Image (cartoon, rainbow, N blue to C red):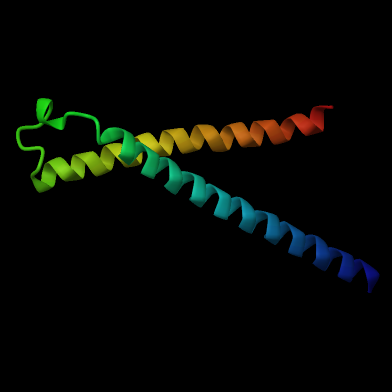
Length: 90
């Protein structure tokens, strides 16, 4: 009976860690996309597109923010993971 309780507690802790990790990933990703959107506001898309205020021009802006934000978020999350792995080495 004690083994079942211990296994249940371990599973609960695992689910809790997974949930926190998922929430952290979502918050970091959205934050980086917002940061990329803000940074891209200074980009002159009229040099690249014919009509930067058209729906296609705005969609290009959104897609660039998502792609750039994704890469920055992936780097940050990888860095956090690597720093947590350092604890295991020492």
